[in-house]
Amino acid sequence: MSLVRFSGKEFKWQAGIAILLIIVAFFVYSAPQSQAQGFTLIALILISGGLLLPYFMWKSFLLVSDKVKSARLRWLMSDASASLTYRGIAAMAFMMAIATNIGMETMVGSFRNTTENWLQQRLAADVYIRPEKATVVTLSDWLKGHPDVEQNLVQWRHEIDSSRGVVEIQTIGSSTEEREALALKVTVPDYWNMLHQHQSLLVSESLALEYDVETGDVIQLPAPFTDQWTVAGVYFDYGNPHGQVIVSNRSELLPWIEDQGRVGVAAKLKDGSDGDVLANDLKQQFGLLDSQISNQRDILAMAMRIFDRTFLVTDTLCTLTLIIAICGLFFSTLATELSRQRQYALLRYMGISGRELAFVGGGQLMLIGLFSALFALPLGLIIAEVLVNIVLKYSFGWTMTVSYFPFSYFVTLGGALASLLIAGCWPVWRLIKRSAILSLREAQ
Image (cartoon, rainbow, N blue to C red; front, side):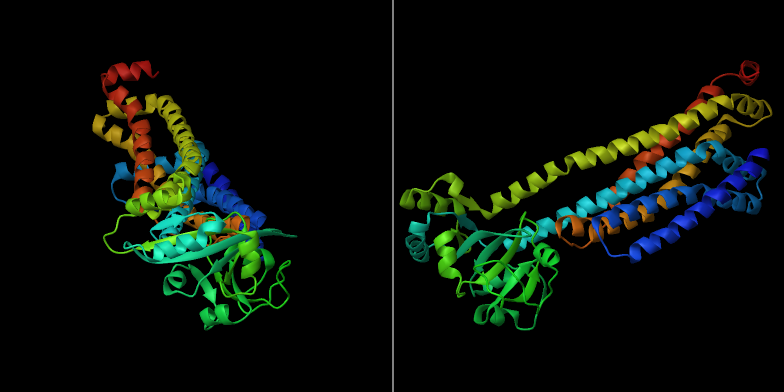
């Protein structure tokens, strides 16, 4: 009763501080968005959630203990609420670790899905060739006459320096295939005709954010651009470290890009044709190297392999964080349960069965763990939304749709709760293996 009385005051103070932090978070969210704002919101969400957790658990356990009629269940819930005095901090760390893990799993998974879908849309051709500029016309004509090639597209690229970093210029033709390969975010009406018939361009999402322009705006870019270029659309671009603009291959800039830039040729094959056969023909006909020819399948596989390796460290750190939190709650509970051997021995001596004692030891910890996990799940999803829509956006200039992974969440929560169940049951199992009178004597 003493523990319950003092823990109530403690948890009320914590809840009051958490409410103040939530109010601060609303003010921070209403401020202009930035990378620092995103990290500040994540910190406020985690700290306020951690402070609220013991209060809600304490109130919930007491409420259930008042409603149940079974004396043993009532004692179990009351004792669980009292145990939050020494389990509360470990439960907070456990909940915050799960929330962070879920938030990172959601962000990385969403990023992976978005990148894969974007690559599949952008890689519309089957074979990509990087020839020398002197041979591009001959190679393009040769591809037109090849029996396996349905269509070939020539694309020019060049980079220019600006006060805000490197800007890559890319040309695009007027074919339907090139139009469908664009991952557009927003456009003006009739943007396609506007792009090819007027002094207009498409800008990548990161460049639009950097230059603070929207569709219909006139963008200020360094020479050879003039001051009259209009933004006809904004497109998603997850594979470029620089801002990028796309201009028509009918543009007045094309001679300059052809003279200064580099060229690429994309070949779309007919149904049933083999890209390896075309690659061998290209090597024999033009003396191209393996590094100058790539097929869609290899590019996609390599990109996703690099992606997974890049985020392997992130997954490892999240797993280590979760393991540390589980160990903290495990050893905190283990030490507590060992210190309560006298209480368990007395209960057993009074007629409580070993199965019921195991239920008490593991059940209380499972209740705390399950409550923490359910509390952490929505908190983790909120963190994922902040990471994707604020942190990533203002770190890299990218936005994406948040995806959810129920099976992954189930595995994470299930593994954590299984570890806690072992922590609660093991000391009791050691106790019930001995006789009741011997356990009582050793606990004196």
